[in-house]
Length: 406
Image 1 (tube, rainbow, N blue to C red):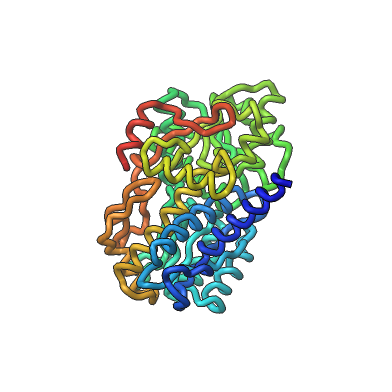
Image 2: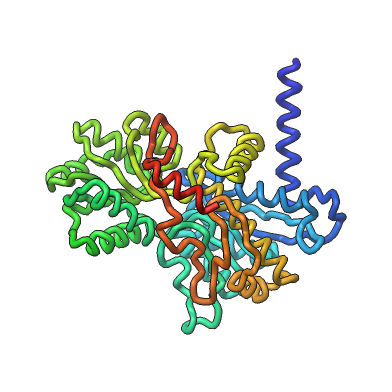
């Protein structure tokens, strides 16, 4: 009976937390019209670990802001929508958030294809969108001046051009490998990531030994792996999502082929790490944030996330941290603009005066009129490695350097 009471109390606490994060509990800010912010991402399906981690990071930041009295005397209200990782659904979500829900800005988006399908709607409506997770290099470049008067698309995640450079550096510079195979999925994310990898290899005077593609929901990569092995590849560079990457790692073991697996940040997804099990050990990938409390602010964030959502391991730690930071940046822009119309918020983001203490990094004038990438240097990224089903720092030097960004 006591256990049942405790469980009910825990559920009640979480429900209250969710309401507060969405601006429905307005203690201290009265019944004033809330500031409506759209939050979209894949909350179901194979990409959901990233989407849910991102959403919960945004919720944590919104909860803190509302608990402190909101912004401009108004509470934040998060209007959340599941885009199911489908581009056509993402466009429908954007249309609903902008046209029906009357949001002042959007946060979120995990999948590159969804971003490309939906951000035109934000651009046309002059509603700022801060992309929290999607990494396709083209995302912030579609609406640059002078072709467009203003660009309403911003980002706090690491573009694939940066990630590809680090993946190749890990294989070529740190491991001294030259024969490299690329295995990627057939989505926009995988195709564009493959192009970034090829460009990064070209800068080192290398052509891939093999380039192989697989589809979402493929479970057997035997043919692709056999061709990559026949090419003499010394390592596999990947661009795909967790479920398929697990099948890839497991397929390598079935073939008895043991070479390093290095890829984009999606190798940190629990549906890769858990489904591949011991076959994921040693896998490496670029990361913006690793769940290690190497600064007081990061430890506080980790503790708060664990307590609020009842987990030991944050499903996708970078997505949670980037979601949190995107909410903080938008809040700073609203404070600076002292209003919530799209043009004023865009201008405030481009000229942000407040120094924002984020989880990924400290943001000091992170955007400009011509650069909407908060992360525009590989110095912010570190190499993570899967050890004992957790992502940890692969190099002590990265751990020490990472702490200096806070």
